[in-house]
Image (cartoon, rainbow, N blue to C red):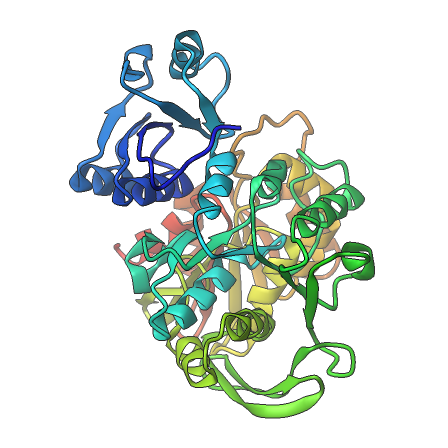
Length: 460
């Protein structure tokens, strides 16, 4: 394994530097004194931001981009061995690292490396903890899988004490990390194009938890089914959060919501009431996300007044129940939810938000996920009053399964719900304008490009 040492800056080239994670890592190394270059297929806001900092970005991937002064090449999982830059680096004998390996190596340079993991909720929880650490002026280094307004992007380069990072299970990326503290939010069936089944996913989370030594801290959701299989025999300290104050270190009581579905609750520690917590983001799921961040922040020595201030100040990240605007009295919200549990959480949150009728415009993400979780999608989407199904966003896949968004629509209708399969974004926009009325709440939802529907309606 190639080692990255902040005390010995080198020349690092990123294949696919425009990705939200890769761009963040490139920026961290650049700010630490490394010479950084990279390539991507297209110009974007992220690559332009890197160029403004002085990082060289080549558009189009060619062997000539791998110059003789490059010391190490970093690549993403999307880069295949036939990529010309990948091949050129191999031919020149330049050391190569996958993105996850680089992120793991970077963690070694910090006193506290906090990893936030789980099938869903990672970006929100990472951002929530980041707001707390910023409120406490701890000068954290942050890498998050979304745009966090408080840091003006997806990355913040801070001091050597605290590194906060999302830890994604897909392709077992998080097994390349070196955390001192972990949060495990939930473990659900997902990414079944890589994992065999839920048990395979649980096995990976067990391996992730085992990366903590006797000085480490694991903060885990007590409501995870058979949680003990993840924690049994670990040398680290285990802290739990969840719904039952009798079984969890951290829990919530007296939960109430304001007119915008934002929660306040009594913090319970070891079953004893402590103080009132007020959140700046909506939804019951964020109550439990916040419990995990309170646990982490307290272990990092953050005073409760700073924790309360950070949680209240955090109003969300882009594409997480993000209010985009209003048109003709119709409120338009966008959300990244693409897993049934996320969809249910978002739509349940929306029920506490002012509205006449709740519309969900959903774009499924990947054929394998849609096929594997079809019944779960049908059940979750019925939380909305009416559902509009766009075509499946293929991402990295080809439809060899014969699955369609129409399959979801038909099953919702058969179950007595209201659903409309409308493949074209233009036709969806027309349908919305003809059927939504003032006071309705419209949520565009999915991990693809469905956000464009709401933005076009709003003239953005």
